Length: 407
Image (cartoon, rainbow, N blue to C red; front, side, top):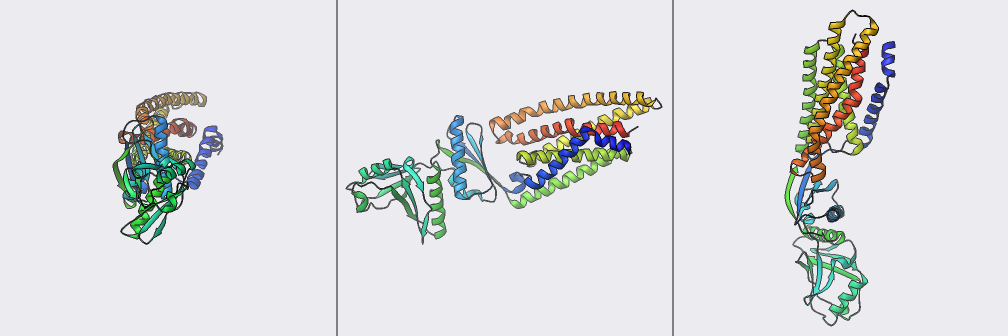
């Protein structure tokens, strides 16, 4: 019992217990953010007309994010991918419902007699759209300068159409009333139109409201690609990953048992691997890191290296036990610590080479975006996190256990 008490008092064991409890609490409270390939959803790749600087890219991301929020889309993630692409991830929405709105530049212009009366920069407030039968309208307010310009252009032109363009497409052409043609500025304007059905009218009005409200994109864009994973397929991926993980634990346990045939060695190795899994998920929960298929592959790779490291430590200790059995206790303990230090030299060297190999992939993902090969950034980052947790937290605890209980 005193051996167990001494083991539990070790600061490395206490740290592991505290972090494990913290991970359980974090996962229970914050949950684990799942990628679209597990949750189901769509990824839309938007390509900019030309490369842009960081400030312009930030504006593009902000406008697109604002549009989707106005549009009512939940669970969205808009992020830059390099200097010419933007990735939009959405869950629970069909991509065809939002591709038009995210790929629309949003340049508004109102003309009377081919003269520009208003532009998008004049808009100060957009109010909720209105539907009457198959007709829709989106009222909005313009600035004083815009109202003055409109009054000057409209003066004396009662009965002529006010042609309202969105991205050079005519969306509305109401007739200029006599009241608006007197030269008196007004800040209240609306764009209106008719659709074939009430549902189509609502969709069109909602799109125009979102575009007017979010402002124009600073650069022309187009939708380069759309990929979708249904919620049902996501469930299949998640179930498949859980089954694969369970089978991996069983197979690894069998192999380790056949290797050592000592439950006292097999059980701690499996528990250490499960602790690493718990801590990795805890970190992902805290930093809101997406757990998707590449991340799951990274977790498996990290745990696999963890098992390798524990086998190295175990073999070193057992080698000592076979060659030095029968020596007096202090000499035996000192020799065991030296063996474990030698094993950890191998463990740290192996971890360093693995992290060095993963860093280029992580660099591509974080600096150039998540499209193409960049999606492997999730694999690289998760592997690095798992290896660091292993070499600094869980594997030292396993080594302490071996040192304390394997005599």
